[in-house]
Length: 461
Image (cartoon, rainbow, N blue to C red; front, side):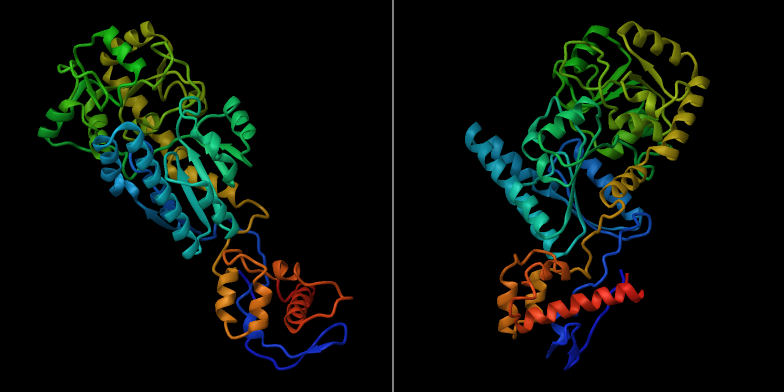
């Protein structure tokens, strides 16, 4: 960002003929240029507070990885380390008391994230679904000139806490569209965009497994995920003896199919399962009564399995055709179609190999987290949008510079310390020409007019 820096001048002309003794060093920190951001080339400072746990936690980490790969300075606040305390509140205390302490811990972490962002003068704070956040923290970030974005990577019909907070974000992104966006806008959101899930090719990739890993993680049929009601009813109905189920929240009685006591599976283990399975079943979660529901979003697993070069059978979702062609993904709409697809695909390893390779090529071309972050950054910092950069300091920073100038400090007391310092903002507090101007007001007016002169002459933009 271009800016003009001044050292010192004892006497300066004013267009109205007034002369004023000016110490330019007091306002040298304020940028005189407001250049629009080029999202493709500008390096941003981004703070990313993660969720404490759950499926959105690895997504947040993949986002951070992608932002770093794109050349941005991304700092992660990994709140996962606080999950053990969060969980103890629920296990050691009764419901209301435990839930109250959980909420307080989440609020503290949300406010902490806001303070870290402000103190580090970041351009953007990126929140993922379930990241700790508070309304007060978001408002403080807005006052400090810091952009905020919220990627809701969950079903808005199932988790509705977004209703109370979306109005506070600058940008909201969802894995659903259509009626979902209408609902979010009605809740007061300023902007909402469709941003589907993705894969991280550095993590979700084909790997060769050792014999003991193949024995442990391999299977003819596998499923990875939590035991949502529709999944439990489906697998109870099908009774597939070759199916291995990985994940939590499944009936303990399913000992023959449930692997390793139904524990949570790490991201690294998930990749091994995908690569070691002949057919990966990908059944989207649902709270409806249908065993297979034609839902409104494509889950992360769809992109992750494909990125691993592994084969999957997925239940048809409305947006699926936007992302994969029929020769890249085997999809089904009914239980009989699922049974038939399993039988057919298990008999044809060459077809599985060809479709898996095609799906992986599609992911690498269009569906990585880097693709998603390029899209998001261009929406957040599009034409005319200006990130808060170190050249655009806060009023508090300016007060630090002029600590020995009581008159200037008095003028700056009209602003909040976290507000971005700019000539336009200072000029808004300078009275009209019919008013007797103070030394500080004259100084600001002079700098503003000099800036206009520089723009006119092409010295600055």
